[in-house]
Length: 382
Image (cartoon, rainbow, N blue to C red):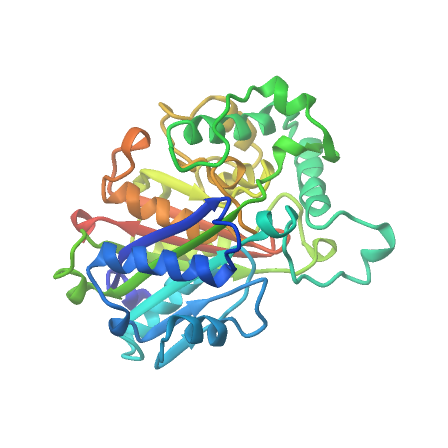
């Protein structure tokens, strides 16, 4: 994997139906429209695409459904399903496939209409026989356990958890496409309805529609396309468990492994990273990932987020589009973290633009189960 540094780049991104889709739209309608935006962004045509990477909570054979709908006949497909981290993994897999000559232009794509359909999280996750008797609210109860343990072990407070939600909302207020843009305070997070103690409804991600697409190709081809290429510098994935009852330590995630692998491949360290897009399905997530990815010591994540460092104007910008807590969360969020990182590195983020040449994207799947880290850079990092 070390040989993949700067071998591939993201050259086009697109979104559709963020928040609430056009009435009557299917997930594949959103996929198709987001794909068209990404193709136009890159200056490519559908006929250029010969690699397809996708996952879905709607379709049992997502690559076949998506390929048929788009009229694609890819020579390489990957429908790895790791939950919300799937699409961060797909970018790494696409880079490897391109380097191996298995495809030339890879489409990474996802769509969901969960808000239009039911307003509830769409999931194909099976219940663990060890957990079913306790009637957990899946997946929030699993994350509530991690939050409670972190509070017990390190003195993390409810106010510090709430600071994550408030920072996300402040970023969303700078993003015209974000679904939730009304003001939010720490007190409002704390006083909102409890979903699974200690997490309230404002500690939990949105339920929205949304489609996203990215196009990945070789660095050589990327140099001739419409937009500045965003290079994949480092990549790592890791998993230690599936169900929360099998997680070795509720306060430490496999991000310590995925992050280390990504840093090693990129030849970089946390101090080189200018912005982070972290999978924030719940407010405990960014605290855990900031610690496990090396941006603070274990147990200090709560203090870091409460200091204002991750909010607009802070020294460590996190989830600059508003994240899953305030921008969008259509069942699986990872592809939208990738899209935001690309826009930031291309200088296209408008009011929320932050300076820098290196972005870290971290995807989470299952119940803190799958961890995937990708580090991206502008041409200045080559």
